[in-house]
Image 1 (cartoon, chains in turn green, red):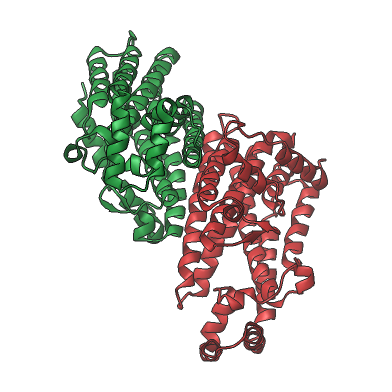
Image 2 (cartoon, rainbow over the protein chains, first blue to last red):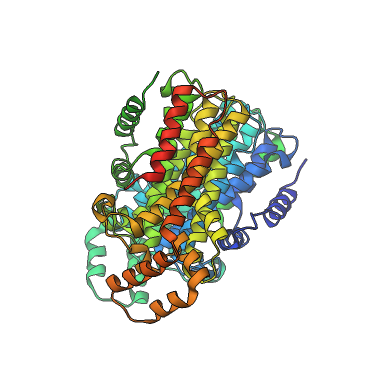
Length: 320
Length: 320
């Protein structure tokens, strides 16, 4: 059996070995910079482990698609950073900071086409299904990003709308990776769909945990200061729920001209009073369990089933 | 036989009838705005006429790909306008002006994926070839745009480099449209390649004529003031040739702090002295003739051969 460690090595090696056209380095240097800047690489891992879990014989046969998903993910980060005017990413200057905004836009476009080329590099019999899944997923992610931007200027976002936004912005790409791995291994449509559902639930747990960590995490383990979402008034599950249950208390805090530290403390006090930390953790756990229930499938290899179970539990408890 | 007029109607109707997901109008309103803002629609016309010229039975069978090429072209304009900070396009505010820069970036990304979806909507047997052509063409166009941006800050651009840049930025998409139409009609590889070569030569004639019109055109027929390229010091065939043959004269003009009108007049005087208008027209004609020579192919329908011949001649003489 292939091990998760061996799969990680495969991915790292393939990313380091990606060849870019030499003719126009100004276009491809930022692509290499982005791809080699690290990150968790969870999406290509999901694709290749899912491939193995359904009896795929050689992970190298699904490696192009794994790289394509990672290339696509990095393209969305690159363009999101331009839209958010973010200065840093993974401890390094963002592309539009290091080069220019035009370079960031154009290199991002090139990454989207490179991702499509990698995804499409499969046997012709499954090309229509694989490419269709990828393109549909991409369209959903753009919609998620658009909703996320629109939420910034809205005060009436509901929890339901928020969950739909993070489903689109975060979950569908994890789900796409899981499903594509199973497809490439020749799994049944039922199995492919259950892995897709696993990825959706995993993504929701993952994103909610991200929101929770930003407010209740340990800044040393989390690797950044907590309270950023509160300072930026970012619509998260915590803020939206608090707004619907204690709007006046939150408005009173927002109305006062408080320093960041004091505002964070006061908002957290409201969250604590509403028991939001525990309620959020319970919600995260319920999504992790939902993900695990999707693994109840006779086609999946039992050792890999354990791996995916553990992954969902770990995602729900992660501290960074 | 299908007529060019009927093909234009087909394209106009299909663009007006394009359906976009209703869920997130903020993402798709700019796409519709861009697609319905007009333009010459030369790329989808080339694709469909090439399809007909090689015996394609029903242009509706190649319509999705024609729309995909037009969608892609409009995506490149949308992102180029952000990079160039252009305020107007086709007589209307650009998307980043009318909405926001973030919207322009994200809607453009969506257009690239929508284009890929349209292109990929063909029979599975030719999907790998059709998609491969499209993706390779897209990669070349990004390289062309990158070179165009790099040329702005370079003083040593050669005519050879310039011709390669416009081949990448302009010609390859026309060539892709011509080749894809022939492919969809089931033409031989030789015929497909000759239509590709036709598109390359046509594109070079087209772009050189654009440069010529900007300096020597009739402002009323051209629809805009002449001399924009000179004022912006844009590296065109005219400027690059003049730089290599009369660098000192040009430097003297640039050194002086002249009003736009006077600078245009002085640069044109240098161009005239070097006979650049006539030499540029001769070069345009030679590319038009090169395009026409690519039509010397027994597979092409003789009435359509006349159409493509006429198109190349007209492109070389166009006044707007």
